[in-house]
View 1 (cartoon, rainbow, N blue to C red):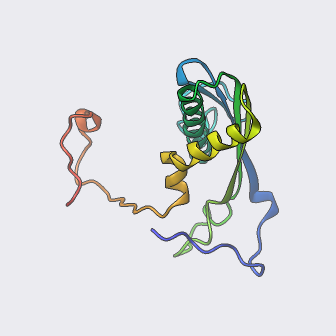
View 2 (cartoon, rainbow, N blue to C red; view 1 turned 30 degrees about the vertical axis):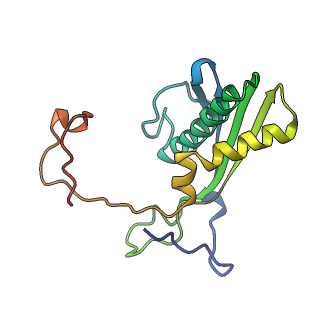
Length: 175
């Protein structure tokens, strides 16, 4: 699915609709991460209100994936990690995405995502930078965001069976 073109200088952004979304991902024991979004309590990313929005959940997924990769690479190289936190942020303009009546959306979504890695470990800075580069290169989430990906979305013909999401359920996607 091609990405919509970036906003041109002639297109007006609505300053009140542009928000910076942030997620702070903190590495914990056993390759687990805790994601801090706004002042929300920890919990599964579900939606809005008292839980992260889908866009915030996407930032949390990126932070968690990168954090796990950096931590795993450090362990594989026998580098003790004392602290690993990632700050993931992006601006989003919800104006075009929530305008009803438009036949085609304007540029929506993130135009750029920034990740700042705070890594305190027993290794020189160039080795730590190599860990970050390697984790980014091999991150499924970063690559999904970075590279074009084919996306198929279709309305199902019937009701969802309880076992439709089970790992052993048959693949019912069209060939």
